[in-house]
Length: 141
Image: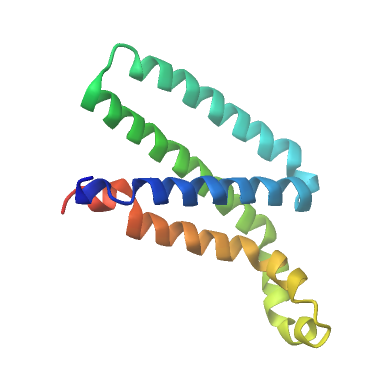
């Protein structure tokens, strides 16, 4: 595999795993925003599928691969948008959680601490994967 595509699979596995986590987080912990978030995701998915069918129609080989990578990057941008929305919605909760770390440590409830600050951790992991493993970051070397 060429150096420029060496980490594509790892990049997309990180993207898929973090997407599932972000969706589960939104479903279980952001109940009041559940309808709006999942409606927006449904619209993004529908538009993406329509564009995918239009753009890939009749393409073969390298052109089809380039279009597929472009659409995957579009979906990863949509995921990043979802996580940013989660961060905005949970920013206050996460900040209070970080300030009260000693309380969580003393009560030995580190699991609740990890869950409440998890949007920050997942965003960090995804941004690092974009920076280190993204197809675009390797294509110019």
